[in-house]
Image (cartoon, rainbow over all chains, first blue to last red; front, side, top):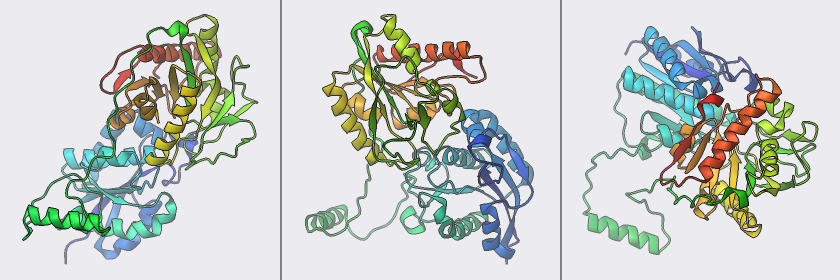
Length: 350
Length: 82
């Protein structure tokens, strides 16, 4: 019977019960007991261990001041001497996923303490951190909390007691791109032939060499003459005309729209509203030009610095949108821009 | 989406506070924004200075559009950072 394990758990301001987007600046707080999802983890753990501390960090604090936040987290974690660190689950929250990844990476690489986190496979943090820690897959939203908590707890316990963790496809964590050596009785020629046969007959097969998701692109040639260029404003901030006439969703939106701005010198606060579930909308509400800089671009057009500002603003909502959907929207927007002979785009993102 | 547009021949200046993330997913021209809820402004400043910050960021975006790049490249005006 191993002695009870010590866990430090990292959560964000929302799951830590501090507040929503308006508290995303919260600097690192420490509670010496389970908080939020930690309560579920403690329950699943039972006598086998306890959460000795919960670290709560604001999503903006952590991602915008990462060096400061990482040091603060490391210093706190070191004091509590945990056997394992758990972060999240972050589901599809991008900043929270990054913070979880960063905490786990720092703790594992610097303090040599094993770590595990959990998030949606579509979370942008996955590609950045999957090699540095263990990431378990979740659904897109907190609806998958009951599914992930027992798995996260069990995995963390195994890490804490020094249990050997096998390959990703068997253990259920996201592949880390680490090649372990596995003995297979079949030769490469046999395996390749079997794979080809399966592929040709429509049977399932497993590639031995998966290709990276984020493919590089050849950048476009730069603008030669700004004074004759037509520049389009594109945004994923979800800034739409007051009343949201096209009924955009605040997350996981798969459509985009154009809104005429030719007649406007600036975006007025009573005519536009931000529909986007992933950032504190206060500042965009007060002055929409802070997310879509139309006022300045119109000024530059009037001064002759740029040739022309494209007549329409192109808008979508950039939160919880899978890569394939972004790809398709990008292609459709390109058709629109090519048709209008737009030379370049300024793209604002939150 | 910015990558798809670049691949089609339209240079794109991506203004974002999270430049590290943008670099890691491979956006070619990345312009440092102020903060997530207000990438093109600083609400702590009086409105004329907020506007001046916005103009500096847009000018940096225009510079990015006129710059030849091969790999993901950041364009930063340190004076706009909080």
